Length: 117
Ligand code: FAD
Image (cartoon, rainbow, N blue to C red; front, side):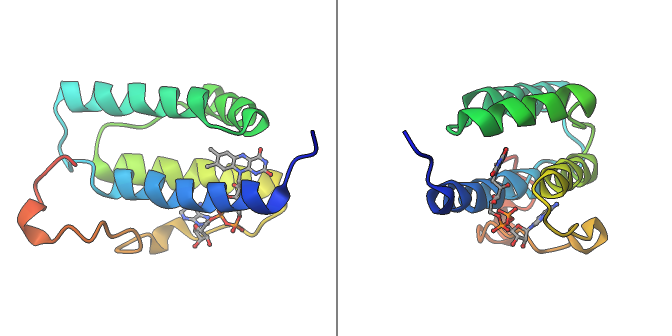
């Protein structure tokens, strides 16, 4: 069956938005348990990504660049970096990771600032 590039791209945009928002909400100073949760999540995310070809590529990126889970900054910076690896592979422009700032806002408000999710 022929692939549909439009649908694949739409899934990609929705997924990246979610993925980066997860990183933006990861604790600044995570516990060991939270670090392990993020690490497992990232590997399972890659393994279960619905586009099989994408999943395969992404798992290769993961083995080359293992997830950084020591802090929110580390996780967000790592996610931005691996997304840029995918951008490069697809011939897309590089995103400036120093401008991540408030780009990924969950809309959950300040009362949950210290929260994990
Ligand atoms: P996207 O790459 O979807 O990015 C969406 C928005 O995120 C951008 O408009 C920009 O505002 C922001 N952004 C861009 N770069 C970054 C960054 N580095 N950090 C933070 N934010 C950023 N497609 C394929 O054809 N082949 C593949 O093998 C493939 N593998 C994929 C693997 C994964 C895990 C995911 C989630 C997607 C994959 N895709 C793949 C889809 C592809 O990455 C794009 O999502 C899709 O092509 C749409 O691209 P886009 O130009 O709209 O922007």
